[in-house]
Image (cartoon, rainbow, N blue to C red; front, top):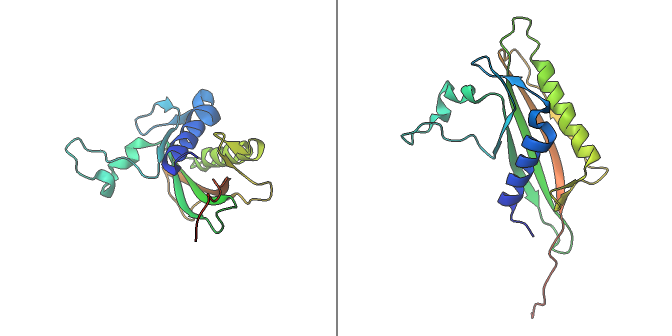
Length: 167
């Protein structure tokens, strides 16, 4: 069975390259049109001197990006599949005065949901059950020029089963 951290990186890479790749371009704060960058679990520490830059506003220069995070998991029965709860958070930049960047966020939401519904097996290990909910949320209030979307979903990972145990 694939370690959870390795599976997370593989699914992040899948979204970054196969799902979005060069099919969707988004604006950077510098005005360039680029593909979306993915991160596993957290944003990187940004400064060269090792200081944690996530406390200031410089992380916003990373837009467009998404974070694929493991929220939690359940392993109630070693003979059953383990459930992993995921969160996919995207941040898009659009400084157009028409304040329509939320449409790019909705495009990301729909692209992810469509992919998860069509490809229920992820990276040959994690699978999405047909009745498994996929939820999304956009923040309330004005976030211009940054637009955020939050998608949650769950996967199952087959159990390795119980080996012989002498009790």
